[in-house]
Image (cartoon, rainbow, N blue to C red; front, side):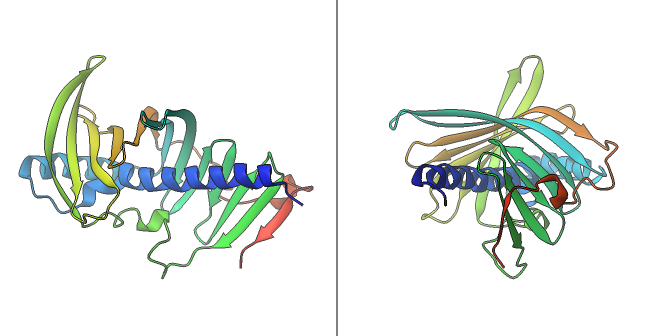
Length: 229
């Protein structure tokens, strides 16, 4: 049986994981939103075309969560490999594999694996297949500042949620003007929380194993298997 401390740790990781998936969904694909600013639309269209031209994408990233009022300052690193609607995400010591049908969440610290089937009819489910349309509406956005970051020109686009109940005040998407790749994404919450996803490495069309997105239970003989459905 799990202790309350273990359950608390796992809940924290799951919460951070969900926040990361939401952030990465917006990070990678928010540029499919219908534009209200022609210059922003032109730039986002170029980014979209670039991303869609790749067979697969591998990203090493840094994820930061900050809240000055609550004295919270957390930094984590991770990586994700994606091909179509499949992905392998490594974050906070947890590996999440999505093979196109089921999600396998592997937690070595607890020696536990959670298996769940994705319900495509669930509007609240955050899946790679929905990332292209998840943020397809509900934002006003326009071009923001242009910054020079270590010799790179980063153009920011500001997105403001239309729904007043949204806990996010604004979202800033940084795009490398030369490569048309995403540099970072900053979410600013109404209560002072700021999350930042910054790309450390962006690789494309890498040689992947044919079993890259396949879960192999034989690798985890002593793990507890938790099947949710």
